[in-house]
Length: 125
Image (tube, rainbow, N blue to C red):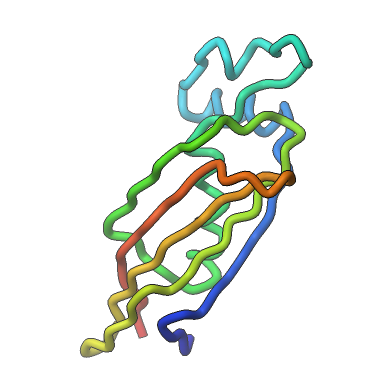
C-alpha cells in the first residue's frame, strides 16, 4: 500500500451493551461500570474497546504496531457512535518495509473528543 505523510483514514462504530459485555467476558474486566447500567440505562464502554476502532484502520493498512499510546479524555457509553480519524505523521522507507508513525483522534456523535492516540510500527512489503 502506498501511504504518505498527511494521509487520513477514518472508521466509526456504535457501541452496544452486547459489545461491552462480550469484551468484558473476553478480557476479564468486569468493573461495575461495565456490567451495571447507569441511571440512563447505559454501560460505560471499556477504554480498550473504544481504542480498538483504530485497529480496523491498522488492519486495512496491514500495519503492525510496535508502540501504542492512548489518552482517555471522557467516557464512552453504549449507544454512542465514535469516529476514529488516523493521520499518518511519518513514513520512512526501509529495506522490505516502511516505518510509520500515526496519531488518532476519537470523537463521539456530538463532536467531542473522547480519546487521543498515537502509534508507531511497520508495514511489510
